[in-house]
Length: 116
Image (cartoon, rainbow, N blue to C red; front, side):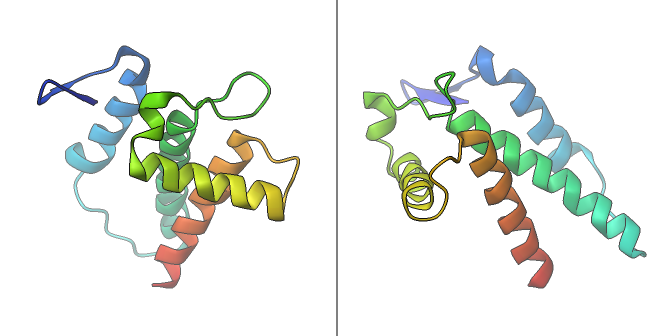
């Protein structure tokens, strides 16, 4: 979704991601987790959702690097995420692409939620 003239407009290139989010957060009943296997499945689904979101935000240019335009540069949350990607790439993993970053980010968030 995108804010256009103070209205939310669905972007066609993000329809699958939007449907996934709606299904995940609004249409499913709360999960009763009674085993470690169910917990692992539940967390894996959320990791996939987070990975899809991050991949959608940091769209790549075909060479594994994120596309950054002027509109994105004006969005503070985008710049925070892009800054994190850039710092990890420069300091820790110079060959990392946006897909690997999205996967790493999702795993970190889900693991942090598990620990919490």
